[in-house]
Amino acid sequence: MYENIETPLLYQDTKSADRKAMVGDMLDRFNIVGKKDLFPANLSGGQQQLVGIARALIAKPKLILADEPTGNLNSKQGEEIMDIFTQLNKEEGVTIIQVTHSEKNAGYGNRIINLLDGRIEHNR
Image (cartoon, rainbow, N blue to C red):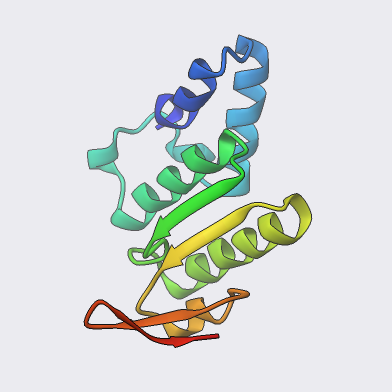
């Protein structure tokens, strides 16, 4: 899992010591430090989802495309992810485009576009 989260930093030529610190911060942020040496097959679906989100966030993107980002998470983990997305948007200006069937998760957004049969049904 550690290498999975670290990979985007390798492409950015981030120094080894900096990568180690940044990955450590992500592992702490998502409460998965104890799982850092496990392979994806040894993780639950929710833990795999958290690793994917940590990997996306570590590169400090300006845009996140999230397709059902809380789909495999329990409700507490889902709320934590949505809170992180809200914080990223408000504090760091990250744009997040989320596709979801969850009205609760959609409610975190600043703009909601409802689709029905591939057409815009409602735009608010």
